[in-house]
Amino acid sequence: MLSLGVYPAVPLLLARERRDQARALVAQGIDPSAERKAAKDADALTFEAVAREWLARRDLAPATANKHRWLLERHVLPVLGAKPISSITAADVLAMLQALEGRGLLETAGRARSQVSGVFRHAVATLRASGDPTIALRGAIKSPKVRHFAAVTDPRKLGDLLRALWGYQGGFVVASVLKLAPLVFTRPGELRNAEWQEIDLDAATWSIPAAKMKMRAPHIVPLSTQAVTILHDLYALTGRGQYVFPSPRPKRPMSENAVTFVLRALATTATP
Image (cartoon, rainbow, N blue to C red; front, top):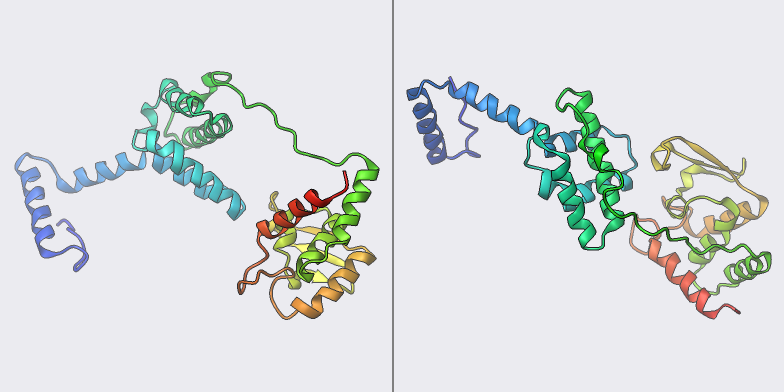
């Protein structure tokens, strides 16, 4: 007996075609069921199958997982995805990386090599590959130039920045997040996604759950008197909702662009 599919997802015409294919295999002395299982096993050993399994098993924050998935699907899988993972050589990976290098995507090439290496390490651990071909590729492509981000190191300029933040005359929610940021020193995304259920104004603490943290561990932020005052005033406006800093669109936190736009505007008007 051999299942040909479930009706109506598999229409009668297609079921008959599959029946005829199965009969043709039987006529050749081939077990259709064993042939199907062999095909499934072969599919499970492709680079794409192992890569998706590796990604699914990693304990990553949703945003990080999405970035890794995008890189795989955009740059790696179109080249290596259909290949049996045991047949992929260092030359195959190098060709993919050199194509990215040729387009000037040096940082992307480095990340792609790192992800391919992670997939192969998982394949080795699960007995589906004998080694990691990317080990031989260290230094094979150019490294991106290190770009240092702007930082305020002069105390006087830091004072100018803080005065600019506190002097912002725009929307109250955006003004509040600008004032609070220097008082809590969290990542911008963690601050924008803060929820009222995480804030304890009486205890002056903000408890960020592990799911929101990059290191996947819960984190408690102590709140200064100034921070509590800012949040207390903001609670009267947004306290009935989920997010401390909500977006104008319902049930969403403030967007990254909302803060970035204001900071750029302040930078153009700041005193040199």
